[in-house]
Image (cartoon, rainbow, N blue to C red; front, side, top):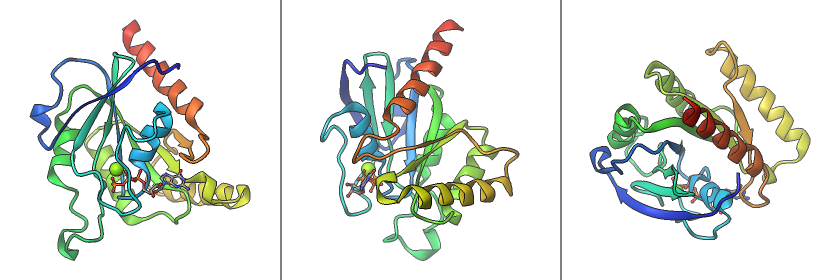
Length: 201
Ligand code: GTP
Ligand code: MG
């Protein structure tokens, strides 16, 4: 898919105030610092369309970006931000769960996972919650530039095995790097295909 335009539309914490039109949208979710905002910039080939930071907790609101004037990318705050108190650490911010439960225009959520780490309970729990709530999702492994090919392959195998303990099959997944653009064509092609299928309905 060729990107001809990418515009920031609005930020808010209330799903009821998100754009009212029916354009399909795709949301990026995952732990703080996993690279959600960086991936939006990489896909759009823009340095600072979405705000990024080395410190977790940068994105605090639901951010809508209108792409090619006909679909939205949504940047969400991370979950599992370490600075919140221990008791509420695993509680996903209410407005994030509200967004996923109520947003009818949402076509698919992308759950971002740092490819360097072993499967983390909070990500596994979030995906289980998505499954129980019947919200379709795919996985994006981020920061692939930080691992050597063998280590990457090994980690993907470990993750797949872990997922198969709970899921019948490994969800569709992508491997990306916002530093070198890996995975860009695959991810945009996937979104493009879904958008075309929706138009054909
Ligand atoms: P929150 O908004 O806090 O939830 O974080 P986020 O998931 O949006 O992460 P963000 O895109 O702000 O990136 C966090 C840090 O990781 C920044 O320092 C990025 O430069 C770095 N980063 C993100 N993606 C990549 C990547 O693919 N490769 C490398 N090497 N660094 C990355
Ligand atoms: Mg962010």
